[in-house]
Amino acid sequence: MKNIKLLTTALTIAVAGVAAPAGAADSAMSYPSRPIRVIVPNGPGSSVDTLTRIVTNRLTQVIGQQLVVDNRAGAGGLIGMEIAKNANADGHTLVAATTAASTIARLLVKNPKFHPVNDYDSVVQFAITLNVLVVHKGLPINSMKEFIAYAKSGKQPFNMASAGVGSQSHLSGAYLQQQAKINSLHVPYKGGGPSSASVASGESQWSLIPSAAAMRHVSAGRMRAIAHSLPRPTPLLPGVPPIADTIPGFDYSGWMGFFMPKGSPRKAVETVRAAVAKTMEAPDVKKGMAFQATEIVVAGPAEFRKLVQDSMVQNAQLVKALKLSAN
Image (cartoon, rainbow, N blue to C red; front, side, top):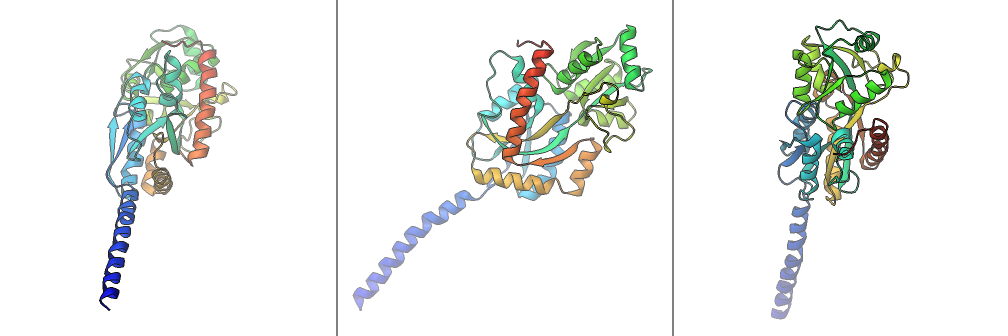
């Protein structure tokens, strides 16, 4: 009888010894276990910063942990992308990935230090960022035809503001000049906030800028929106026609989503993907994105990765056609 009791006690201890590591493993697998850092490779007030905060404010509630925005602007987004690449791949770092920072800026340097597909895990796309052609309110320009005519009149100054060399507004504006057969002095600023403010103040005369960087000024009457970059009309900008109505075939908008450093846990990728999909259904997020004239488009890792790959090809061809060289 005594031997049976000893055996029972030994078995209990053994089972407990096995169960403890399993419980620890389960605890280690809980995600997220602490606040999530969201690297924004652009400055405060930029279109990327604005849209990221609209999403993360609600995503914090959906995912159950605080999302902390970390603005790391510079070099057209290259600095922030490099920081994200080298972050711990534990699922607690996201980067707000965009067309400009991920696929354009790297084309304008000789030795880019990251690859948008090979060095990150694509998590989820959540938006299409259309560009809006805006002009200073004091200019006698109310349509694309008037814009082109004014540009060809030779009146000065007629400067094009952008968020910096390699930004979405830089490439889209250069593309517009090529297609419209006009010339304008490019004035790069340090981010979308300063560049849009320069048009609002009259320091620059126009920009083809992501809608989220423009709509606050447009709504306040500080600048005028005369056309947009989608190939079709959009209810997000009623009364504002596509550039393609005047320049057939013009179509140049961006995308936005989240990457993680390469090798992040699959559980983390799937948890964030599902949480973002739910977040984008929230009425306040829909309202916020609509106010910024930004289309909600949700795509998972495989589809998002394919979009990034296609964007790399498109922008490489465009940079070559525009004869923009690496520094």
